[in-house]
Image (tube, rainbow over all chains, first blue to last red; front, side):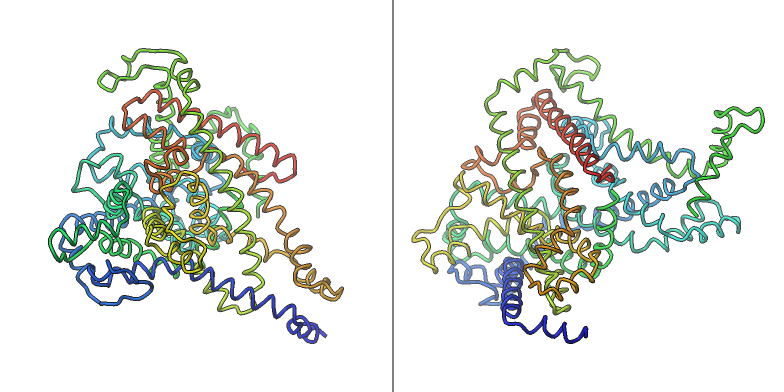
Length: 306
Length: 323
């Protein structure tokens, strides 16, 4: 009975038209999403002077590593990439550990300060001092020109805290009870029992924190724009974008100018831009698909309960 | 389990001996000192980094000079606000903010719901998964990368102009990012490109909670695909849509900062400049901290009022789990 109705459902002609249109539409979405990255990939591996002729779409015409070797020989960009990686690793470890610890304390029903701590944290989601008071605080704390300005001000993410708390509250109570009976204190319980069991939530939150650390440029711009040794990859890319925006002429004209200046140049603004775009996106492209099942779940929990 | 936990506090609270509630509280606090040590550093952190800047709002009632001591500033009352509300450019910025966030709200909702429903209708599970994974990608890349991609796609020799010329829709390449009246549309489309896949997550999760027997019953009654979408899937999404819509109405002054800052330029500034950029321009570029703080404070307070009203509307509609 069920099978025959299922068959009827799948075989009618309007249904087939619907399915085909739907698949074509999805392919269109996939193309619109991926093509820009493919184009950047093609430009980054194509000979810079050849790219000026145009006509590079999804695949390089004249393969070369020159753009990449140019970028990594440029000390400033190499250094910026290093800072980006450092702040991503250090920032993620610190923030996830501290956020999880705070989330654990407010997940303990018996904790007398639970309501107070939760309220103090949640309130900050709705009010913020804003740009200028925040900037003045960082200045007063003498954090301008230091690496730690990337780590300390973002150490607790309240949304992330809620995601982790919801997850801990969903763990079976018996586990933590039995740890307590075995004489484990709260810190030991947190380290040895809660952290390992919370891995799915921690994976989600780590992804969020790592992505925002890797992607951020505004704090560099605000606090460290005169400290070149603390610049990040995204900030360097942002500066290139701004120059090409203010040069009202097309990027191509800039390229031709660059090429005309010294006869044949190794690289052009367009190829540098494309290469840095690929370097800036590659770590993300390589990581996020593997964490998909975690963040989809984390988003659903946080979205509903937050 | 939960019942037991709810019962225990009432037992503890009843004054057994001569202990007052306060003494009991401190006694418990001492027993839970590990939990206190685990949370206190972060409570202090929250006060320093989230609450102290709130005190910084006093700057908007001062004629703030960075060279002077914090306690040595000249108070000017509402002067900064009066200046703000008599400034034409402030109203232009406010208009841009509200228009851009409304466009993002409407476009963001419609596209995400449509995509979620269409993804749900795909029968090839592997294909569906691959499309979903790919659709999340732009959400994770930075706005710097996205703006780079968008500005090269929209360049005179970019792919958009090439396609439109090939389809004979235009004769001359258009300087998309150089005309103010295109800016809102470009921004809306960019937001959709970046976030539509991500925004489907919550709708797809809601669709899975719809009872499959409803679809079977509809089929037996002879409902076609479109009728099933309109009469089962959409009504099933109603409560999620209402809740998200209300929550987002509270964010009407949050039109974003990075896309406008990165894609805007001197030619489009009349349309691209929003409140956040206004604050940055007055505060950091011109050094008028007081005026910038006043504008920022205006934004936070109005947003909060919107959010409170949104919350009370949600409660009245019976969707209580917002805060």
